[in-house]
Amino acid sequence: MLILTRKSDESIIIGNNIKVKVLKVQGNQVHIGIDAPKDFSIYREEIFEQIRAENANAVQNNIQPAMLEQLENNLTGLKNLLMVQAPEKSDGKKK
Amino acid sequence: MGNKNDRTDEVVKGQITQPYHKRVAKRIDETVVFEFPDGIPAFEDSKRFVLCLNDKIKPFFYFKSLDVQGLGFVCIDPFLVCKGYSVKLAAKDQSLLGLEDVNTAFVFSFVTVEKDPCNSTTNLLAPIVINMENLRGRQVILDENFPVRFNIWKGLEEQELEKEQGKSS
Image (tube, rainbow over all chains, first blue to last red):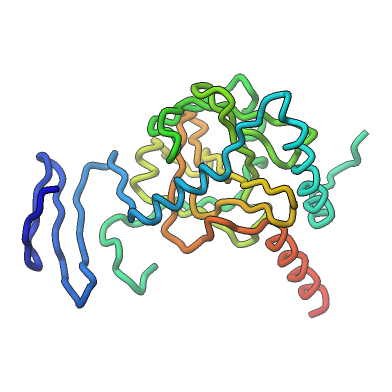
Protein backbone atom coordinates (compact mmCIF):
# COMPACT_ATOMS: atom_id res chain seq x y z
CA MET A 1 0.00 0.00 0.00
CA LEU A 2 1.25 3.42 -0.89
CA ILE A 3 1.42 5.66 2.14
CA LEU A 4 1.39 9.46 1.84
CA THR A 5 1.35 12.06 4.58
CA ARG A 6 -1.08 14.94 4.13
CA LYS A 7 -2.26 17.88 6.19
CA SER A 8 -5.67 19.53 6.23
CA ASP A 9 -6.55 21.07 2.88
CA GLU A 10 -3.98 19.00 1.04
CA SER A 11 -5.02 16.54 -1.64
CA ILE A 12 -3.84 13.58 -3.62
CA ILE A 13 -4.68 12.89 -7.22
CA ILE A 14 -5.39 9.37 -8.45
CA GLY A 15 -5.17 8.83 -12.18
CA ASN A 16 -6.06 12.08 -13.81
CA ASN A 17 -9.60 12.51 -12.62
CA ILE A 18 -9.90 11.48 -8.99
CA LYS A 19 -9.04 13.89 -6.22
CA VAL A 20 -9.05 12.97 -2.56
CA LYS A 21 -8.76 15.90 -0.20
CA VAL A 22 -8.23 15.93 3.54
CA LEU A 23 -10.68 18.56 4.72
CA LYS A 24 -10.36 18.40 8.46
CA VAL A 25 -8.63 16.31 11.10
CA GLN A 26 -10.36 16.22 14.44
CA GLY A 27 -9.18 13.80 17.09
CA ASN A 28 -9.43 10.38 15.49
CA GLN A 29 -11.79 11.54 12.76
CA VAL A 30 -10.71 12.60 9.34
CA HIS A 31 -13.06 14.43 6.98
CA ILE A 32 -12.31 13.54 3.42
CA GLY A 33 -13.64 15.13 0.26
CA ILE A 34 -13.64 13.13 -2.96
CA ASP A 35 -13.99 14.38 -6.49
CA ALA A 36 -14.47 11.52 -8.89
CA PRO A 37 -16.23 10.92 -12.20
CA LYS A 38 -19.92 10.15 -11.92
CA ASP A 39 -19.59 6.49 -12.80
CA PHE A 40 -17.45 5.72 -9.75
CA SER A 41 -19.31 4.38 -6.75
CA ILE A 42 -17.93 5.45 -3.41
CA TYR A 43 -18.96 3.71 -0.21
CA ARG A 44 -17.87 3.50 3.37
CA GLU A 45 -16.15 0.15 3.47
CA GLU A 46 -17.96 -1.32 6.47
CA ILE A 47 -21.35 -0.49 4.97
CA PHE A 48 -20.43 -1.99 1.62
CA GLU A 49 -19.21 -5.15 3.35
CA GLN A 50 -22.44 -5.34 5.32
CA ILE A 51 -24.44 -5.23 2.09
CA ARG A 52 -22.25 -7.91 0.53
CA ALA A 53 -22.71 -10.13 3.55
CA GLU A 54 -26.46 -9.66 3.59
CA ASN A 55 -26.71 -10.40 -0.13
CA ALA A 56 -24.84 -13.63 0.49
CA ASN A 57 -27.31 -14.38 3.28
CA ALA A 58 -30.35 -13.59 1.18
CA VAL A 59 -29.26 -15.54 -1.86
CA GLN A 60 -31.43 -18.50 -2.72
CA ASN A 61 -29.58 -21.25 -4.45
CA ASN A 62 -32.74 -23.22 -4.39
CA ILE A 63 -34.82 -21.47 -6.99
CA GLN A 64 -34.85 -24.76 -8.85
CA PRO A 65 -37.75 -27.15 -9.04
CA ALA A 66 -36.28 -29.69 -6.63
CA MET A 67 -35.71 -27.23 -3.82
CA LEU A 68 -38.46 -24.81 -4.63
CA GLU A 69 -41.06 -26.46 -2.50
CA GLN A 70 -39.26 -25.89 0.78
CA LEU A 71 -38.63 -22.26 -0.12
CA GLU A 72 -42.22 -21.74 -1.10
CA ASN A 73 -43.43 -23.33 2.09
CA ASN A 74 -41.32 -20.89 4.04
CA LEU A 75 -42.63 -18.06 1.93
CA THR A 76 -46.21 -19.13 2.32
CA GLY A 77 -45.87 -18.70 6.06
CA LEU A 78 -44.68 -15.17 5.52
CA LYS A 79 -47.28 -14.51 2.91
CA ASN A 80 -50.04 -15.58 5.24
CA LEU A 81 -48.79 -13.08 7.75
CA LEU A 82 -48.81 -10.41 5.07
CA MET A 83 -52.32 -11.21 3.95
CA VAL A 84 -53.68 -11.00 7.47
CA GLN A 85 -51.97 -7.71 8.03
CA ALA A 86 -52.66 -6.01 4.73
CA PRO A 87 -56.36 -6.43 4.02
CA GLU A 88 -56.53 -3.27 1.93
CA LYS A 89 -54.70 -5.15 -0.82
CA SER A 90 -57.62 -7.52 -1.39
CA ASP A 91 -59.09 -5.97 -4.49
CA GLY A 92 -61.38 -8.78 -5.41
CA LYS A 93 -61.45 -12.36 -4.22
CA LYS A 94 -59.44 -15.10 -5.83
CA LYS A 95 -61.29 -17.59 -7.91
CA MET B 1 -28.79 14.38 6.72
CA GLY B 2 -28.39 18.08 7.05
CA ASN B 3 -26.90 18.18 10.52
CA LYS B 4 -23.66 16.60 9.43
CA ASN B 5 -21.91 17.71 6.33
CA ASP B 6 -20.84 14.18 5.46
CA ARG B 7 -21.38 14.73 1.80
CA THR B 8 -20.82 18.12 0.37
CA ASP B 9 -21.82 18.19 -3.25
CA GLU B 10 -23.55 14.83 -3.82
CA VAL B 11 -26.99 16.18 -3.15
CA VAL B 12 -29.79 13.65 -3.36
CA LYS B 13 -32.38 14.27 -5.98
CA GLY B 14 -35.25 11.99 -6.80
CA GLN B 15 -37.47 10.52 -4.17
CA ILE B 16 -39.53 7.45 -4.92
CA THR B 17 -42.42 6.71 -2.65
CA GLN B 18 -44.97 4.89 -4.77
CA PRO B 19 -45.11 1.13 -4.79
CA TYR B 20 -43.89 -0.53 -7.92
CA HIS B 21 -47.08 -2.20 -8.96
CA LYS B 22 -48.99 1.01 -9.56
CA ARG B 23 -46.99 2.14 -12.55
CA VAL B 24 -44.62 -0.35 -14.03
CA ALA B 25 -45.60 -3.87 -12.99
CA LYS B 26 -47.42 -4.36 -16.26
CA ARG B 27 -44.18 -4.20 -18.10
CA ILE B 28 -42.48 -6.97 -16.20
CA ASP B 29 -42.39 -10.63 -17.06
CA GLU B 30 -39.77 -13.34 -17.42
CA THR B 31 -38.81 -12.28 -20.91
CA VAL B 32 -37.65 -8.88 -19.75
CA VAL B 33 -33.92 -8.98 -19.10
CA PHE B 34 -32.49 -6.43 -16.70
CA GLU B 35 -28.89 -5.37 -17.06
CA PHE B 36 -26.81 -4.78 -13.96
CA PRO B 37 -23.51 -3.43 -15.30
CA ASP B 38 -21.82 -3.67 -11.87
CA GLY B 39 -23.49 -6.92 -10.87
CA ILE B 40 -24.69 -7.17 -7.29
CA PRO B 41 -22.28 -6.79 -4.36
CA ALA B 42 -20.90 -10.26 -3.57
CA PHE B 43 -22.12 -11.46 -6.99
CA GLU B 44 -20.34 -9.08 -9.29
CA ASP B 45 -20.19 -11.58 -12.15
CA SER B 46 -23.91 -11.72 -12.45
CA LYS B 47 -25.00 -8.95 -14.74
CA ARG B 48 -28.28 -10.09 -16.26
CA PHE B 49 -31.40 -10.86 -14.29
CA VAL B 50 -35.07 -11.64 -14.84
CA LEU B 51 -38.03 -11.34 -12.52
CA CYS B 52 -40.34 -14.26 -11.98
CA LEU B 53 -43.75 -13.35 -10.76
CA ASN B 54 -45.56 -16.33 -9.37
CA ASP B 55 -49.05 -16.19 -7.96
CA LYS B 56 -48.18 -18.86 -5.45
CA ILE B 57 -45.75 -16.63 -3.63
CA LYS B 58 -47.33 -13.23 -4.29
CA PRO B 59 -46.56 -10.56 -3.01
CA PHE B 60 -43.05 -11.98 -3.11
CA PHE B 61 -41.28 -12.63 -6.36
CA TYR B 62 -38.03 -14.08 -7.59
CA PHE B 63 -35.12 -12.24 -9.05
CA LYS B 64 -33.02 -14.73 -10.97
CA SER B 65 -29.59 -14.48 -12.49
CA LEU B 66 -29.16 -15.47 -16.11
CA ASP B 67 -25.38 -15.62 -15.73
CA VAL B 68 -24.97 -17.77 -12.66
CA GLN B 69 -27.14 -20.83 -12.69
CA GLY B 70 -29.29 -21.28 -9.63
CA LEU B 71 -28.53 -17.83 -8.26
CA GLY B 72 -31.59 -15.96 -7.22
CA PHE B 73 -33.23 -13.84 -4.59
CA VAL B 74 -36.64 -13.55 -3.06
CA CYS B 75 -37.88 -9.97 -3.22
CA ILE B 76 -40.66 -7.78 -2.00
CA ASP B 77 -41.98 -4.28 -2.40
CA PRO B 78 -40.36 -2.46 0.54
CA PHE B 79 -43.10 0.17 0.61
CA LEU B 80 -45.56 -2.56 1.46
CA VAL B 81 -43.72 -3.71 4.57
CA CYS B 82 -42.38 -0.42 5.88
CA LYS B 83 -44.66 2.55 6.02
CA GLY B 84 -42.79 5.79 5.56
CA TYR B 85 -40.06 4.11 3.60
CA SER B 86 -38.61 6.22 0.86
CA VAL B 87 -35.74 5.97 -1.54
CA LYS B 88 -33.72 9.09 -2.03
CA LEU B 89 -31.41 8.39 -4.89
CA ALA B 90 -28.00 9.98 -4.87
CA ALA B 91 -27.21 11.96 -8.00
CA LYS B 92 -24.50 9.42 -8.73
CA ASP B 93 -26.92 6.51 -8.72
CA GLN B 94 -29.37 8.40 -10.86
CA SER B 95 -26.71 9.10 -13.40
CA LEU B 96 -25.44 5.50 -13.36
CA LEU B 97 -28.97 4.33 -14.03
CA GLY B 98 -29.55 6.99 -16.65
CA LEU B 99 -32.68 7.82 -14.71
CA GLU B 100 -34.24 11.04 -15.86
CA ASP B 101 -37.66 10.62 -14.33
CA VAL B 102 -37.94 8.88 -10.95
CA ASN B 103 -41.41 7.73 -11.96
CA THR B 104 -39.86 5.24 -14.32
CA ALA B 105 -37.93 3.62 -11.49
CA PHE B 106 -38.89 0.22 -10.17
CA VAL B 107 -37.83 -0.46 -6.61
CA PHE B 108 -37.74 -3.68 -4.64
CA SER B 109 -35.73 -5.19 -1.84
CA PHE B 110 -34.13 -8.55 -1.16
CA VAL B 111 -35.67 -10.82 1.43
CA THR B 112 -33.66 -13.07 3.69
CA VAL B 113 -36.06 -15.96 4.13
CA GLU B 114 -35.91 -17.81 7.43
CA LYS B 115 -37.65 -21.05 8.29
CA ASP B 116 -39.67 -19.22 10.90
CA PRO B 117 -41.51 -16.62 8.83
CA CYS B 118 -41.50 -14.22 11.77
CA ASN B 119 -37.72 -13.96 11.50
CA SER B 120 -37.56 -13.11 7.82
CA THR B 121 -36.05 -9.77 7.03
CA THR B 122 -35.67 -7.45 4.10
CA ASN B 123 -32.82 -5.15 3.23
CA LEU B 124 -34.08 -1.57 3.33
CA LEU B 125 -30.65 0.03 3.27
CA ALA B 126 -29.76 -1.36 -0.13
CA PRO B 127 -32.80 -1.64 -2.41
CA ILE B 128 -32.63 -2.61 -6.04
CA VAL B 129 -33.54 0.22 -8.38
CA ILE B 130 -34.24 -0.41 -12.05
CA ASN B 131 -34.76 2.23 -14.66
CA MET B 132 -37.65 0.80 -16.65
CA GLU B 133 -36.86 3.02 -19.61
CA ASN B 134 -33.53 1.32 -20.33
CA LEU B 135 -33.89 -1.78 -18.09
CA ARG B 136 -30.66 -0.92 -16.32
CA GLY B 137 -30.48 -1.62 -12.62
CA ARG B 138 -28.24 -1.54 -9.60
CA GLN B 139 -28.34 -2.15 -5.92
CA VAL B 140 -28.06 1.28 -4.36
CA ILE B 141 -26.89 1.97 -0.84
CA LEU B 142 -28.96 4.71 0.73
CA ASP B 143 -27.61 7.49 2.88
CA GLU B 144 -30.36 7.24 5.43
CA ASN B 145 -30.21 4.92 8.37
CA PHE B 146 -32.51 2.17 7.13
CA PRO B 147 -31.82 -1.30 8.52
CA VAL B 148 -30.12 -3.99 6.48
CA ARG B 149 -32.19 -6.55 8.31
CA PHE B 150 -35.67 -5.13 8.67
CA ASN B 151 -37.99 -7.65 10.26
CA ILE B 152 -40.96 -7.95 7.91
CA TRP B 153 -43.33 -9.30 10.51
CA LYS B 154 -42.53 -6.58 13.05
CA GLY B 155 -42.90 -3.95 10.36
CA LEU B 156 -46.37 -5.20 9.56
CA GLU B 157 -47.31 -5.36 13.20
CA GLU B 158 -46.27 -1.76 13.65
CA GLN B 159 -48.35 -0.70 10.68
CA GLU B 160 -51.34 -2.47 12.14
CA LEU B 161 -50.83 -0.77 15.50
CA GLU B 162 -50.64 2.61 13.84
CA LYS B 163 -53.87 1.95 11.99
CA GLU B 164 -55.63 1.02 15.22
CA GLN B 165 -54.34 4.11 16.94
CA GLY B 166 -55.45 6.22 14.00
CA LYS B 167 -58.96 4.80 14.31
CA SER B 168 -59.27 5.42 18.05
CA SER B 169 -57.98 8.98 18.04
